[in-house]
Length: 387
Image (tube, rainbow, N blue to C red; front, side, top):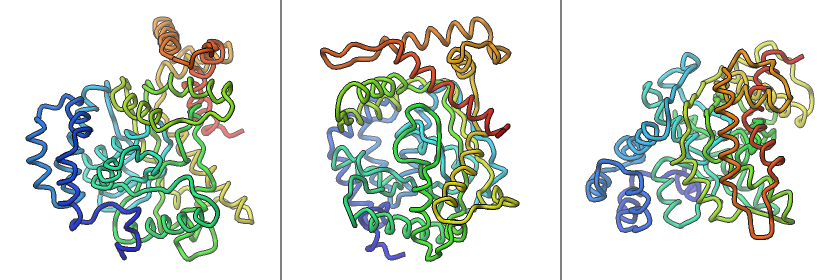
């Protein structure tokens, strides 16, 4: 791989790691973030470990792996990985998953795969989240590659082609990758793969036909399910702001709040499910002619497998029944679980803060929150019975 060609987006090379760790050791903001985690190792002990890191792999195994394990232990009731029979330990894959949490979807998956002996995937992350200059250094040290956002004109195509070429070369060299199925999180938890993502992934292959262009990436769909989404109330809050405030856009401060809330908030039970590879899912399927229709069909194939992999919890079934005014799913929850779920929704609405002069629209917010928890149920039911 031509590392210079991809320098603006790729993770750090071993030669670049010492300078990066030296930069990070002098950062007061990073120290504040680290000490807020409540880890047993002191800042000085972390600095000593950082100085021994000679590669991205070193940093992941010696540092970030333990950070994520700490979050799992303190912010989750349980975290599980299923479906590993669909991959091999030494295999190089492009994992495409639904997107719930800005940081933890990929961080949890990294740790879970490492625990079963699989290759640490590199992580695609939008450069809009590089809210401080040092954040880019940190994420590249942790094996992330950047997706360029907010580009104009010809820059969009050039950046997409460079990203796709990098991903094809990386998988060809035996590296695994992770990328979300869409730009940004699905605020309503109705997870749909953007056909434009698959089109982008095909650009670096040298093949024109969609399936032939995507096959070298060894695409594997992954489903992430959180019993409770710590950012649910922030997502509902954003929905009302977008509805009521002309031209509303999240600020970098908003992104920071979402990242911090997602990491430190309570998640309950968490599940990751590895689905069947795209190559297997396409066996016996006739795809339509034409690029646009073909990419849309490929996205639908991935969506169906992702939806089938949901882990559903009582709050999901309660929300699905509440939205429709039914009790058809009541076999999946007890009266106490129903009462607890509805109390939870009330507590989330109470957390919402809007600008002065704008009052919370409680019926709208309640429906938004219920929809977030109900959509995985609806989608899973449709995936098992497409009719």
